[in-house]
Image (cartoon, rainbow, N blue to C red):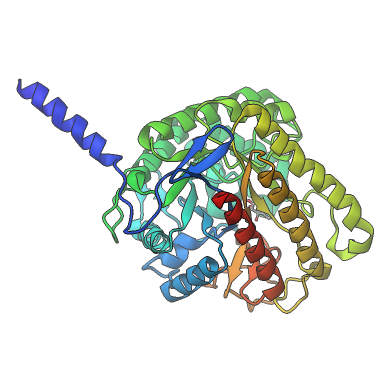
Amino acid sequence: MRILMRLLAAASLSLLAVVSQAAPGQSGFVTVKGKHFVLDGKPYYFAGANVWYGMYLGSPGVTGDRERLTRELDQLAAEGVLNLRVLAISEASTLKRAVTPAVIQSPGKVDETLWKGLDFLLDEMAKRDMKAVLYVSNFWQWSGGMSQYVAWFNGKPVLDPDVTGDWNSFMDNSAAFYREPEAQDTFRAVVRQLIGRKNSVNGRLYNADPTIMSWQLGNEPRPGSDANSRPHHEAFVKWIDDTAGFIKKLAPKQLVSTGNEGWMGTAGSKDLFVKAHATKNVDYLTYHMWAPNWGWFNPKDAAATYDSAWARMKDYLDWHIDEANKLGKPVVLEEFGINRDNGSFEAKATTINRDKFYQSIFQLLARRAAAGDAIAGSNFWAWGGAGRTTNADFMWKAGDSFVGDPPQEPQGLYCVFDTDATTIRIISAHARQMSTIRKN
Ligand code: IFL
C-alpha cells in the first residue's frame, strides 16, 4: 500500500511538472496541427530574430546588461518581433574564437550564472508574450560546442579551425560527437538538468513554461564535412531521432526541432535532410539560408551577383517549403543573413542590398504562408541591437559588448543594429503581415 501511495505521489508530481505555468495574460504552448503551428486555437505565424547572446545579457555575472536587454526586448516587441532563437548551453573551450564564459565548465560541472541569465531572459520574454527557441548544442566552434565535448572525451587536442584553417577536419571531428557515448551521456545529463530547471526569477519549471516554444538539438548540426560525411549519415539521422525522442519525454508540452540548415547543411543531400526530419520526434522542419557564405552572393560585386543569387535563394526557399508540405509538418526559415553594402562591418554603412533581399524573402514567405503552405515563420540573423565593437579588426574579445554576429565573425558582418531604421521597418511590416494571417 505504501509503495502504491508513493507511486501515485510520484505520478502526480510528474503530472504537475508539465501543467502550464503561464504568466498572467500570456498565451499558451505552441502546438502543431498538420503542417501548421497552433497557438491558443489559432494558427501561429511569426517574424522572429536570432539573439544568440540573450542569456549572456540577462546574466547577473560579468556579461550581463539587463538594462540593455529589457530595452531591446521592448524595442523588438514594439516592432512585432516576438519569437527569439537563443543559445542555452555553451561549453568552456580553448578554441580561439569561442565565447567566454560558458555554461559548462568541464564535464558535469555547470556554472549557474549564465542560466540565471536565461531565467531572466525567459521571464522578461513572458512579460512581453514572446516565444523562445532554445538550442542546446552547437556544431560550430563559437560556443565550445560539439567539438569541445569530443575533446573532453577523446583526449586529443581540439582541432581549431580558426588556427588551422582546416574546416573539413573540424567538421568531421564535430560530427564524431554523435558517436561518442561518454559525450552523449554528459550532453544528455546537462540537457535534462536544463529542461527540469526551475526558473529562479518566477519559479516556473522550464518544461511547463509556454514561453519556450521549442527545444532545439543544436545550432546547425551537420553529418560532418561536405568532403567526408557519407559514412556518418546513418549516425546523424539516428542521433537526431534518439535525442529528439529523449527531449520529447522530458518536455512533452513543448516542441522539438533540429536546428539544421536544410540540404546545404546535409552535405548537399536532399534525401538526408528529409530523412533527418521525418521522425515523429521532430515536430517541424528548420532551414537556414546563407547566400554570401555559400558563394551565391558577393557583396563587393552586388551588381553582378544579385540576380543570380536571388534565383538560387528563391529555389532554396521554395524547395524546403514544398518538402515540408509533403512531410505534413510546419517549417521555419530560422536563419538568413546578408552583408551591409560592399561588405562593410560599420554600423553607419548602408544596407540597400540587404533591405532588397529581406523584402524579397519576406514577400515569398508571406505569400506562401497566406496560400496555406507549411511555412510558419522566420528568424533573421541577427539582432545586433546597441552592441558595437571598437576593435580595429572588428573581432570580439572577452568583455566586449555582444552583437548578433558570434565571436568567430567580424562584429557587424550580418547583424541588424538598432540604428538600421530601414531594415527594421521592413522586418516590422512583415511581422504585422504574418500576424494578420494568424487572425484570418
Ligand atoms: O555566425 C554563423 C552562425 O554560426 C550560424 N550560421 C551562419 C552564421 C553566419 O555565418 O549558425
